[in-house]
Image (cartoon, rainbow, N blue to C red):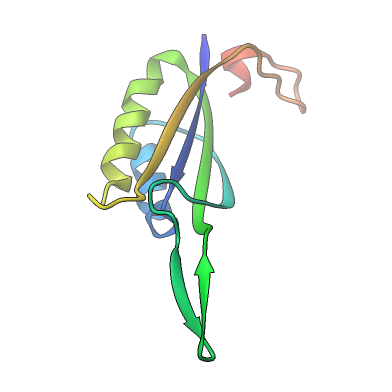
Length: 113
């Protein structure tokens, strides 16, 4: 069984999270620049004397597909590395993955990871 972890974190925590995931044996991940908001609700900024509401804040979305037995250690690594103790630290979503295929070789399942 394989799982997909999607983690939304603060951009400046990316290197810490990447290093923590490598330490627990995660060999590959995808990083996507994103914008969003949750309880933070954005903030206001002053630009050339005018006030602007910034609804969407910069975020980083990390996607990892791994064997089910690696999920708990990966989640713990992300939580530890991404935590600042402040609102907006992020979220982690875990979903099942039915199939993975490596395009180059045709390998399937965990072998394709």
